[in-house]
Amino acid sequence: MTSLSVEVLAADAAEPITSAGNAQLGIAVLAGIALIVLLITRFKLHAFLALTIGSLALGAFAGAPLADTIKSFTTGLGNTVAGVGVLIALGAILGKLLADSGGADQIVDTILARASGRAMPWAMVLIASVIGLPLFFEVGIVLLIPVVLMVAKRGNYSLMRIGIPALAGLSVMHGLIPPHPGPLVAIDALGANLGVTLALGLVVAVPTVIIAGPVFSRYAARWVDIPAPENMIPQRPSEDLDKRPGFGATVATILLPVVLMLVKALVDIVVDNPANGLQKVTDVIGSPLIALLAAVIVGMFTLGRAAGFTKERLSTTVEKSLAPIAGILLIVGAGGGFKQTLIDIGVGQMILDYSKDWSIPALLLAWLIAVAIRLATGSATVATISAAGLVAPLAEGMSTTETALLVLAIGAGSLFFSHVNDAGFWLVKEYFGMTVGQTVKTWSVMETIISVVGIVFVLLLSLVL
Image (cartoon, rainbow, N blue to C red; front, side):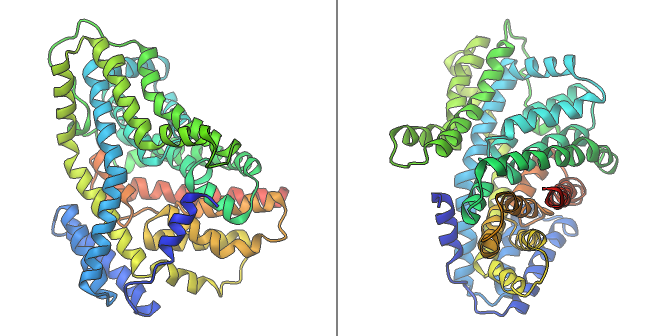
C-alpha cells in the first residue's frame, strides 16, 4: 500500500469528536452547509467568515465539544494552507513572472494565432489535459489560470467558454487517470492492474472531457456571461520591454513542474521501492512544492533575466505577486477547515454505515458510495479511499477488466457536485471572480457532468468487455 493511502486511512480511522447518531449528523451537515450559503448569499458576509462560522455551527449541531470543533477547523485550515496555499503562492509568483516578462503574452499570442473561434475551447481542453496528466489539480490551476484569463481577455472570449474546458481537462485527469493519488490508492486497495486501469481510464476520459468541457462550456457561457476578472489577470507593467523571452523558453519553464512530477510518477510505478536511491531523488524533485519552486527559480532566469530584469526588479515582481492572493488563501484554507470538521464528526462513517445495506450492482454501488462521501465531506480523495475500502471485498473473484472498471467507477463518483465544503470550489470561485451561485451553475454542474458521464461510460464498457 502506498504511503499516501496509509496516511489518509489512518486519519480516517480516528475516533469521531462527537457521539451523535447518524440522523443528528445528517441534520448537522445540511444545517451547516445551509448556514454558509445563507451568510454569503443573503447577508453578503465574506466567505472566510462564513466558512468559519459555519464550521463552528456544524460542530455545535452535531453535539461536538467546542474545543474539539475549533481544533478540527484549525487543523484543516492549517493543512490546506500548508499544502495548497504554498502552491498558490508559488503559482502566483510564476504567473507574475510570466506576465511582467512578456512570456504570457508570447504564449497567448501563439495560441490565438493558431487556434481561434470554435477551435479555442478544444485547444484549451487539450492543453489542460496534457498539463494535468501528472499534476495535482491545484498545481494545474495555478499554472493555467494566467493563460486562461489572458486568452479570454485578449481574444474577447467568454470566460466560461475558455475556463470550463481547462477545468474539465484538469478534473478528469485528477479523478480517473493514474498516477494521480486517488486512482493510485484505489488501484492498490482493490488489487487492480495499473496498465489496464490507465488504458480504460483514457477510454472513459476522452468522451467525458469532451462533453463536460467544450460541449458544456457553450451552455455555461450563456448561464454565466462574465469577463475575466481584472484583479486576477497578471498585468503587464506600463513601460515597454526591449525584449521578451522566447516561446520555447517560456513553455519549457511552465512544463518543468509537469515533467518533474511525471518523472516521479513513472519511477514510482516502475521501481516501486522506497529504499531505491533513484526513487528517493525523484520523490523529492517531483513533489508539488519542489517542482513549482524549481519552476519559479528557473523562471527568474528564463523569463525575468531574458526580459532584462535586474535583481531589484525580480524582487519587486515577487513581492507584488503575493498581495492579490491573500483573500484566496484564507477562503481556500477555511474551506479545508470546514471539510476537516465534517470528517472529524464522523460523516464519512455515517455514509459507510448507511451504504452497507444497499443491494445494487457493484459498479453502481461503488459510484454511489463515492458520491455520498464526496457530497458529505467535500474531499475527492477521502471519497475514493473510503469507497475503495468498502467495496474491496467485491473485487475478489473479479476479472482484471472488472476490477479496473471498479476503480474508475469510484473515481467518477468522487468528482460529483463540488460545493461549499470543497476547497476547490472556493479556489475556482475566487480565481474566476464568480459568486457562489455562478460557481454552482458552472463549476459544480461541470463536476457533476464528469461524474455522471464517467459512470455511464464505465457501465457501457462493462457490457462489452
